[in-house]
Length: 494
Image 1 (cartoon, helix red, strand yellow):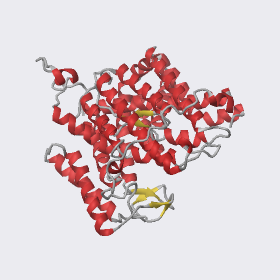
Image 2 (cartoon, rainbow, N blue to C red):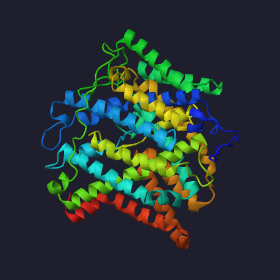
Image 3 (tube, one colour):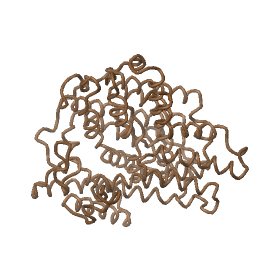
Image 4 (tube, rainbow, N blue to C red):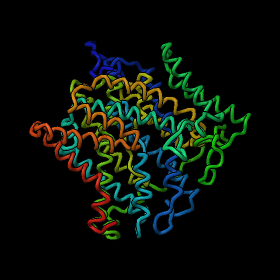
């Protein structure tokens, strides 16, 4: 699939069309709205999942977020998660005019929970203070031009590999969350339960996936969004008849063929007033006095590096799928995208919901035709509404939303033809980038492996002088990132 920008019409536009450059990018208001809705429904799970990850866990002092019990913490986290995601996604649409949604970063929230808040003497406020600090550092790097310069220093075909790798990554996420691919006793993963597809929820996923595929090949507009809504309706019907119940209960596997996240059923209460009591509950520098300068510094570095490159990979992947990249693989308004993303990290920490970052699930909206920031505004408004209708958001189960991720993974995989697989200097780094993202379940790990391999191969071929100075610097930082645990042990900070 070509990653070059589509042809631009010369006729001027005005109003909404002119502000978002909708016609200029080959889109329509209808497509942008459908795309924004598709992105929301594909990533709305974060409003439910983030409270489970950080709301149910106590810090090292035994306190939960908000100072109450886990149930109250989850309600607080859900409201704040939706608020920050909504505001920052709208900001992305208006400021950067890019079809990219933001919310609490998965992986980052787990690291903040288990790798920071549970350290001896650390509190939730201290942990969120480090997130805010990391966001400020990233913002400074953007405003000084450093982050943008690093992005431009990356070879174009390596950026393409990042897009392809993310495509495989979100495909794995979709298959795993739907229970089609699972952990296995004898092998890392297996198909379904014991090597076979089993359970009505899996059937909902299969039906949803096939429905989207059929609609796509028949050029039905809104195929992904229709598929999500239709699969959700089917899931509600299946649960009403079969009384299947959840896969997990009390944090343990209770029913292998149950629903993965939400049990689809119309909620008794649809509207509820949000409690935003978590806003501002952070201690910016408290961690430095609790665990020391070196330990706190290493934690900030780890957060920063993951945040730094996850967004770069995501915005390239989205731009490539939307046909918005220039000849060097750069999206429009790169610096504005990165500024908003940096502010989102600060906002996430300040609201005690962990760092907010760009979501690759935005690709589902692009798959529906989204090409401008109007789609992001639609997604953001939906997140703001989700603060009040959180019970309704919980109706959509994994099995109904994840078929969209698999389809979008295919669309992103098509970009692999843009890599010269006979040039080992780029093919090997591209290969490592692509395979390590899904296999390590980390976008950052894939990007880091590709960068380091690229530099090493250039050195081996006597072309070290051809490597951009910033690629040298970033690759060295990734070496430190991969060796962060040995470094901690060597410094005696554990």
